[in-house]
Length: 258
Ligand code: NDP
Figure 1 (tube, rainbow, N blue to C red):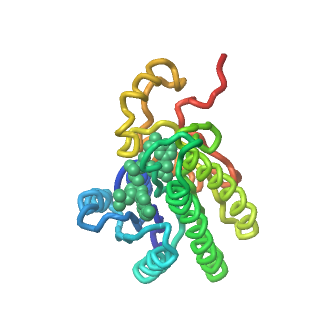
Figure 2 (figure 1 turned 135 degrees about the horizontal axis):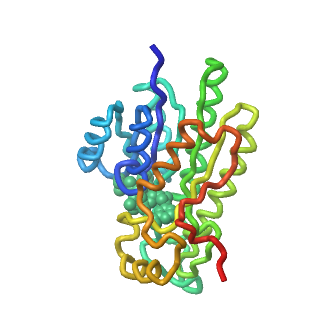
């Protein structure tokens, strides 16, 4: 019997991460789901993923903590004994949007450690495990997907720390893609635009108006489902010769227009 592939999705029990988890479950993956909330809070989401046929474990912990990251991977190793796909999706917005002439170093540190340092070192640890698996089983297939943001290239001066973190994640994608090429482990960046989740719930009316006024080519909010479909295509191996590349899921927001 062939074992199902295992995908680990940080921040996978709600928002974009859940959209990704849903599509990976439908694509036949077993899942490890991370979040900072206790398992009880994620129980409904985990149940829905199991109903799609996936074996699902929950790996709580703060991605910004090295000990927590090691604990998550240990749990996956103990339960599944393998890891094929890492999706670095967990992320935070600044607690308060502030102009870069006033924003605090504390907020910079909070956003950078969570959105960049966490993903960077989780990738390092997962990549080493994938390299080991590949050396033991020549048929092993794995990949890594970083969920960045259009903020990697679109400047928002009232959340500079978020933009800097996402730009850094974009370079991290290229760095790990370059390093893991010899092991045939592709690393991709998925770059969403404006997606309807808890993260954007506080700015709904602002984006409703911007979208109405033509912010995106496609005149609607993006949905976690849109991002989930893109990540599932990558995780299934549908882009085998595209390592290091950016897949935009932004409804055409970044298409230059006149
Ligand atoms: P949400 O706020 O809806 O969900 C964030 C998820 O990340 C939650 O599952 C949360 O866990 C988890 N998380 C937050 N901090 C940590 C941490 N320190 N350690 C582990 N898990 C953590 O956000 P979205 O779904 O909107 O965003 C997901 C990703 O997509 C983020 O990286 C975000 O930057 C990016 N993105 C979002 C866009 C949008 O418009 N919404 C646009 C572009 C990119 P828990 O559920 O336990 O609280």
